[in-house]
Image 1 (cartoon, rainbow, N blue to C red):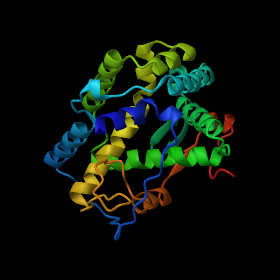
Image 2 (image 1 turned 90 degrees about the vertical axis):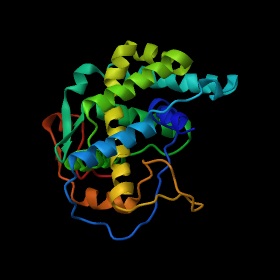
Image 3 (image 1 turned 135 degrees about the vertical axis):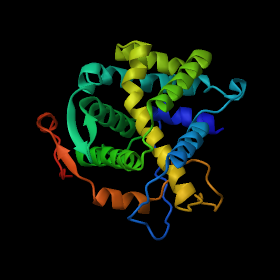
Image 4 (image 1 turned 60 degrees about the vertical axis):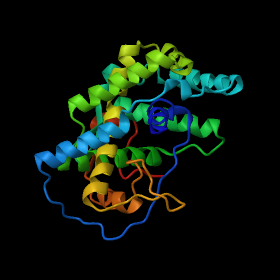
Length: 265
């Protein structure tokens, strides 16, 4: 079932509310020993195996007609709002840097549009720009931590994951993704190109989660005390020190979009 969870995370995240997985742990170590090449390869291999596994596609149930209609409507609305905003051109415009990791205009528009639509569909308050920026900063400090350890996803890991997602799309042909792409006004190839940054950041978080489990002696547990199998289950106490030390720079292009840091609520 992990395969299904990851697919839902990366494909259908636009229609679901993400839950914050919080687990308190002790003695965060500020210093870290450099990883050997063998350790890096071990981490990347374990993370890739957790994200790309064989699955019996016949066991993946589809939404019922009512659910599918609702999902399609949400994806249609998302695609319309992404059109002209999340583009290849905007992918090349840097609006902020976090420890050197870039946030592009496409990253910003995707996060803002997606979070606002999630709130609207779930009858929740609209997130402020400050909240949206903080979520992006959290993503980027994790990617920065992974990069500093030498475990930011290499190109072959990203390509392998994209190929796996393309296989999933080809076999199951999820109509909501087809609707999203059509209303977005892009091709399937361009969809995967635009999603590559999100895939890379998600894989960076998985890689870092594997590192924490293997080398920080963290057996992740869920609310019932069972060991959690998702390497993205990372305690706030691990992320908070990264946020406190984050070096955030807003570019002139970012300021033109109204982005500021610290951002007023």
